[in-house]
Each structure stands twice: as C-alpha cells, then as structure tokens.
Length: 232
Length: 351
Image 1 (cartoon, helix red, strand yellow):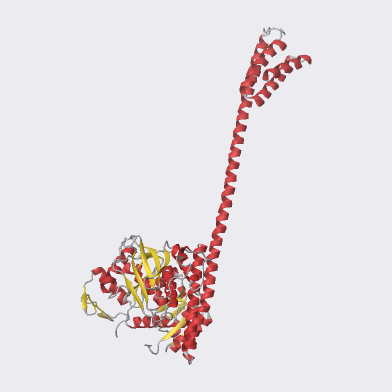
Image 2 (cartoon, chains in turn purple, orange; image 1 turned 30 degrees about the horizontal axis):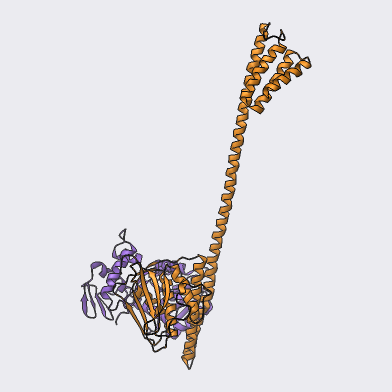
C-alpha cells in the first residue's frame, strides 16, 4: 500500500504530536522531516522538497495558513491540514488557500494514513486524461460516458460535469464554491441548494446502494468528496 | 394684591410727605414687583391704578382727578407708558426665564438618557466581552483536552507495533476513543449552553449522517454486522451535521454495548408518518430493551438517571432539542430497543 521513498514534512508546535506523527509515518515507510512552526516548515520545504506537507494551523510566529500560502506560491506539493473539530471556517479558509485535505484532531492513525496515501496518489496521477476507473465505476472523459457495474448510465451534462470534477480530485474535498466555479462557470445566482439537487440526482444514478454511498459523500459545510480509490 | 400694593404705596408715600417724583418711583417699584410676581395683566392693573393714584394724590391739584399743569399730563402719560413697558419687559423676561428653565430640564433629561444609554452600552460590551471570553476559554479547553488525546492515540499506535498481544492495546484504544467522544459531547453541550455556538443546519442526507456515525466507531463496531436502510422517499434532514452525527454515534454506541456482539444492529431512515416536516433516523438493536426512566431523554434534565448510557442519552436529548428535534427510546417489537432521532426535514423533498 505504501509508496516507498516519499518524504513527508510534519509541522506542529506540540512536540508530542509532532514526534508521534513522525513515528507513525516512519513506521508506514515514509521518510519524515519535522518543523515546529510555519517559518521552519517553509524553510525545510524549500530546502528538502518533501512529497507532502502535514501541518497544524494554530502555531506561533508563522501559522499554518501563512505556510499554506507560501507553499502554494512555490509549487503544488500536496498539503494536508490538521484541523480541530468545529473549526469549519478554518478548514474552508485552508482549502481556499490551496490545502488539499484535512483531518480532524483527534484523528485515528489509519484514517490519517489513508488521507496521506490518497493525496500522494492523486498528486502522482494529476493531469491524467482519458478514462478514470474506480471499483464498479468507469468514467470515460473523452467519450463522456459513465458505466456503473458495466452498464451505461445516462447523466445530464451538469451531472457529468460534477462527476468529472469530483472524480478527477478523488480523495480531495471539493468545496461548493469550487463546484459552482467549475461547473456553472461561477454563474451568478447559482445557489448551494442547486448544487445539492444535482449532486442528489447524480448520487441516485451512480450509487448502487443509496444507504451506503460508495463514491460521493458530503463534507459538512464544505462540499463533497469522491471517496472511491482509483483502480490501478 | 396688585391694587393693595398700590394703595399701600400711596399711603406710605403720603405719610412720608414724599414729593411727586419720589412717589412716581415708588409706584414704578410696585408695578415692577407686580409684573415680576403676578404676571403681565396684574402689572397692567397696577399701572393703571398707580397712574390714577399718582394723579389724585401727588399731582396738583391734589385730591382731584384733574390736572392743572399741562406738563404734569405729560408726566402722567409717561408714567403710564413706563409702567406698561416695564410690565411688558418684566413679563417677557419672566417668560424667557421659564422657557430657559424648560430647555434646561429638557437638556438635563437628555443627559440622563445619554448617561443611561452609555451605561447600557457598557453593560452590553461587558456581556460581549464575557461571550468572547467564554468562546476563547472553550477553545482553549477544547485544544488542551484534545491535544493530549491525540498524543495518547499516537502513543497507543506506537505501543501496538511493539506489543506481543494487541488485545490490551485495543482495549486502551477503545477507551481512549470513548473518552474522546465524551469530551466532544460535553464541549458541544457547553458551547450550546454558553450560547457561544448555535446549531448550523444544512440539508443533510440521512445516508451521510449514518456513514459519519459508523466512521466514528471503528473499534466499537469491529466485526459487528450493521445494516443500513434508507427508505425511497426519505427527505434530507435539515440539521447541523456535526451534532446529528454526534447524536447518532452515541445512540449507536449505546446499542452496540447494550446488545450481544453477535446480534446485528440496524440503522434505518424514513419519512415521518405524521407529516413531511420531520425525518426519522433510527438505531435498532436486539438488546434488553429500554432502560427504565430513559424513554424520552430529550425531555430529561441532567438529574435524570445516568446509569449505563444515561449521560450519553441525556446529552443526545439536549443536542437534538437544540436543533428542533427529539430523541425517543421505544420497545422494539420482537425484543430490543429502537432509539429514534426525529429531525426537521429539509424543504424540497427527497434529495
């Protein structure tokens, strides 16, 4: 499961959390770097070019938001944010600044490792065109066709655009604002409720069991996440 | 009174043998006093009577209403004019003084009002500051409780890798997660109680809420069979997703602990038969049934029976109530408990 050789930079001002995280990541086969604030984090990121950055938000001197902004000016390194429960405004702000995902403290280690894997994989596969394949679902972006369990499913153009956007960012939360921006070209008057209606009908068409969504789940207050892992 | 004053002045002036000029001034003083004390009409009456008395008693020929010297006609006329003018002036002055007094009182009233307004504003600011204080206190408490929990979990994972037998570590992990959930519960309650956060409802598909609850209990539900059903025509809940998941997690955890591990648990959502305003989310088990005294935890106070699962249920009730919902425990046909969470339904039907 682990991609060997990837290096992860851990930025957190709490030493027990930072060391604990580094130990878990090392045990999972990743190389690790540690920084205790955003300043040190930005410096290490520039010098050592990690494959992924895992950062807390509230830190002395240079905080996580500033670090995200600096990293995004420098490149596209995946950024995973350690957020606190109830900090929804912080989460959305971090995503808007360019963070790729978040885990909420106290997180479970398997959950954290799954998020790390998803980000590294997504980053490696970025820019791929053509056919996206997930267990039970195939999305042919050139022919604009979708098949669920081998059967073609008819989607409206809006539903297809939403699915393409979410599936292209599999494992990453996509905000309602980003969906409106990409699918409706930011058309004024497009409300979150309109997005919800289209996502609702999309889910009814592609989810084999609506009670146990396999592909698209809601991220409260944020938007949606395509959760299936790509095949291959 | 004005006329009596004029009479008294006449008598006094005559007794002193005053000449016409002195008497004129005495009369003027009387008129002035009348104007100041009694107002313009009384002053005019005093002026007229004083003029008459002046003529009769002080202008030759004395004791008659006639005037011999034409110059004295002028004097008398001037006296009358002076008296009326003075009366007028004094009355005006008096009125202005009264108006000024009224304005002063108005200004004073305004100042008092302003004072009260400033006091109220200071009071409101103090309240806001104490709100801000409570918010930052809760944030600090939240951070200081969750950081060690996060460190504990990481430490347990480290321990798990080196432990020969992982059963103890599993038990510790399960208890740590449970502690973490209780902290979440209490902080949610504290936030709602302190008014520092209000529920933020959004349309939430029941399947996503169930998924959130299942994800929150990986250890409690390990190896457990849980079925999830969402009826075709189930509307989305209009609820704060974090709080709704928290409630369902507690209900599911209680069910998992109450019923034997080999019995399946059921999560089921459906429309409320009573009408389209609500949606029902149920956690069903095959355990021993409803604990006594906990049939309607959303109406119970904190003093309610807090035996097994009691605290969690009372918290569930409070959180549900904060979102306009209810939690009810029902005996399940065939044995076991149905924990029912009813939440407001999102408008626009099934989504």
